Image (cartoon, rainbow, N blue to C red):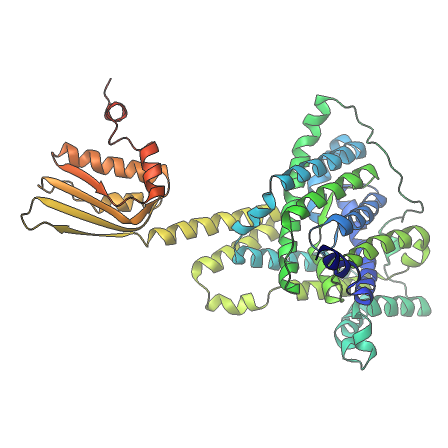
Length: 497
């Protein structure tokens, strides 16, 4: 079974994976250079990182077909560290980021993805699509009409080439777009911005190096806050991307293995002179849309990237940015969940609020972690509010009029505990009170405290209180934290000494 799975991951889609890997490698170059510039480091730092992370994650990642490399979300977190302390501290922070991610993997924090609702994922996807599109705008402002013509032609090739008989299904249209526009620009000598204009490409292979920083507690104090932030944002983006690729390919992946894989890849990047990275939604979507499915596509992307920037850098430098902009616009259009706009009228207010809030926060801050945090927080609050509405009560009086029975249904927790107390009539002159909880469940100490308050108030009024029907889980939490049947604890609550 394991052998079959491994064989399928590597050799189940050789042609599709190789061609998709070529497209991704070409698309990674300007991205890695741009992210290096954002972080304030030499372009080779981002390019070496993208090569190293992609190659390592191809072997040990938990999600076949997903592309990991240097990313903008991570680059934004490095700016201050590089500015204040320099490149060597960034490399040390990258290695520590990897160590933290491996620990998170062993703590099974990948399982926390189950707390991220569908509306948060939709908001995350839509925000990333908007950010990817916005990142292309600098390449389309203050330029000649040739750039617009080339970009429009590129989009035409990308969307129309698949309809060409026979060959349209054999070659990925983004690759055809990049190659054909590069050949055309070189043939007529078009003077437009190219990859070479973004920065010098490295001409040597990366070498192993230990970050040149003192191994002291002071160094740890400097890099740890950055490493922690990089680890959290990196895993968040990686796990969200893995979930999206799971949906696109209708397959499952090991999220905890992905955490460890990302960690090992970042340690490798730090020792090879690269910056920290994570999974890339844009490149992963390019890979899937171009036919990539297995680990081979990620390996080809990383390997070809290194070959191109080191041995074919003169040719790569001639690729017009307009061709890559067309590919990234295709990615943003393909990434955006267009059905979510149509569903706004059908979906509940809470779902729409969570989705739109996630989009707004991510786009406003350019920080994926903030957006997802806000989305999960709002989703949790809406859920708690919704569940509290399912708690209700009924009551009945005995024939002789001396016993009132309160029967509760539903979930009693911090958000429904006040409502629980409101159902009691503490001023009613009855001798006996029965609280029937056989159809209710107590979740937290706030709920237990409410039960204590109800019992204490009735006893103050001179009534005898009997609690019946507690299920085992509720009984455990009430016995542990409740005070209404513990005289010594009750005295403390009532102000006794």
